[in-house]
Image (cartoon, rainbow, N blue to C red; front, side, top):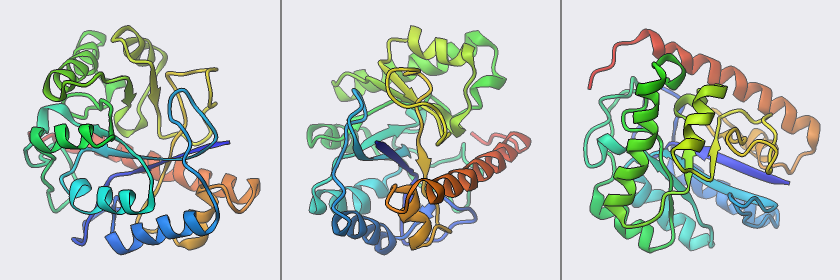
Length: 246
């Protein structure tokens, strides 16, 4: 079984939200996985194990997350918001704002083995956009990241996990090999490669819930944790009511 964990910010600064996990807590996750004997899987093509993904492309990934992952021998996939590379996260309703990785940092991470995927240009709710605009958000982000890093961008992650049949088709037409939701219950493998599952990890996850999300406490515990994640993801849709600042 492949468990794909989705993180956002790894930082000492607290935020008005659930997406920031302290570097100490993140290292405890890595230590737990090592102690449990879990191994790294493969995102695509999928292979059993655990995979780390990080949405939005914040600069704190390079400062805190990537050094810890390297220390414990794990890889990662990073999904930056392409139009905000090197800029402050003015698209985000979370406070305080955070700076995104620069192009120089992204290129260095890509050279060091981080898989760079795409996450649109400006992080919109894709299902709320006209198809032509959604197509631009998806395809332009792929081109921008490939031009900026010099690496092929194979994978895509839907902002907020917001996807429909139309949006999934646009991701396929843009040339991606696979795309990821924030729905833990989505079928994994080649059944629907443009609606693959991920499990978000949040600041309110204690040790037992993280263990469940990593798949070490059995199916029932994982199912409870997945249902909790579905609730959190629905709450993120409140962002639709807030003005976009930038």
